[in-house]
Image (cartoon, rainbow, N blue to C red; front, side, top):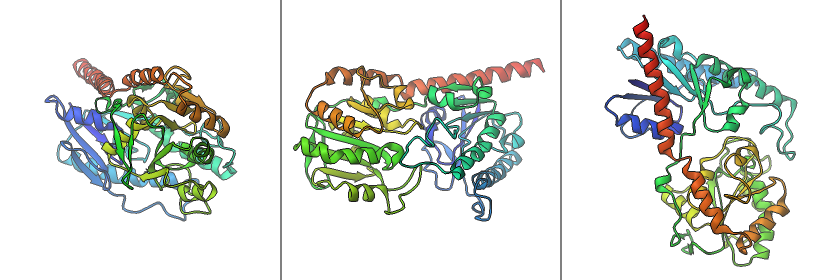
Length: 410
């Protein structure tokens, strides 16, 4: 079977399934990604770059769609070149969020197109308007509704969809939900797990050890979507009331979701200005190598994960797999994996005092932490990448069987 992966940031969510298929003799794997995509050893990657950016003269509500058209056009050129050379994929597995597969069916009408349906935007009831500190404008509502034009086309164009969680599935229009299957791509649970002897050497030379009162926070970038502002506002009192605890924060200064603050270069600087803390106790590590990240999770006494109702982070599942006692926000995506008092703890996203109290209770051993941590590890095993690969592969094999049956009928 010839499988073509398309992802702006390949491998992205397709890392495990693409790596697995590339080693199988019955599969031929090819990938397409942006010129900035990291790529994956063992998988040939064709890179592209849109010939221009969306025009600043385009209406702001439609600019995202123009950008998608530009991505789709450039990928179409690659697909037509492949077609001219005799290439014919059986299946195209793609993340369509940047418009890359808008015209894939025009190049290869007989290929089955599977879309990774990550998120369908809503003007109400999800991330937009969730945080009263950042009220949306009417322009924001209009932009979100316009942005879904791309996602509706993607849902219409694909033969099947895959989404990682039931909550993300529920966001998609009811008319298309039967087309979408819930399959989480998986985390590498074999590389994760508790280590009571774990140590973490900080940039200042201090060594932190598992079992010490260590608070951890991880996000791709430190920003309100991942509750960074709530977390930082809680720290001064936590540090005051627990004078021996240390705090380790992993994440960049960019913006993955939302926007930058108006009065500071980034959210880290803004929050530190508003909430001064002892930087001998609060350690900002930035973006770190994976091995360092694993050690951060393994030395954690309490791991704080806060998020708007939005895409669930791999880091939450990885923290659970590492045996962290997770204190998560009581928001829909988190409730799907954490049951309060069973495999972690939940706290209202906006209740700073409750967050402070729960962190201190954990550090002071007021909870049966070991039981929660063991349950968290077991829960995370249900999101292992081996399960994700098997589920993806079953989907691909079913498509192959259907294709063969159709050929016999013809």
